[in-house]
Length: 127
Image (cartoon, rainbow, N blue to C red; front, side, top):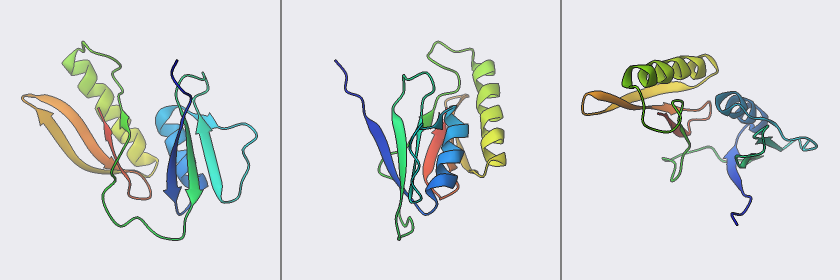
């Protein structure tokens, strides 16, 4: 049986970061979790892991050792044109929510993913 687990992250502003990732992933605030120096979001359907953010005094200074990939097209096989349209739509949504687009990566002649930064500079990909 798989274990339930939580992805934890450091943050300068845990509530802002939790709100960004809740929008990005379709998550909601964790019921009953109300901490001034922490925030937690959960999958409303109960399938995905919880994600918690704790306030830390230091700022991010280097590349993440681990990051989230948002897979907007679901599982393969994909229609390449539909997948590309979904990726670009999600990137635009996340830029409007405070993310920064870094670069686009291709695999051969197809869009692979878009590398982005969340509002605190943490790398992630939209694929």
